[in-house]
Length: 71
Image (cartoon, rainbow, N blue to C red; front, side):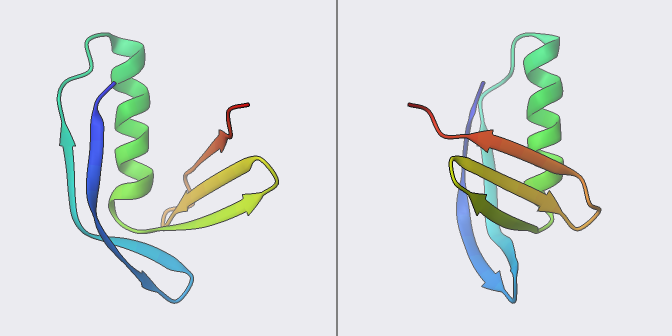
């Protein structure tokens, strides 16, 4: 529901944002909840794993998100 951007570095097996911005607002509660979860998982460093069409991001606190490639 909004654009995320930033610079990052790789530290061992973890990706850490050196700057991170989220532009815009999420208009409804469901989108806002998902947006909050994405910020929580990605914001303080995360590990990424690709398995076929799936990308899984796992935070330092072991919270995760899984995305499936379109198409």
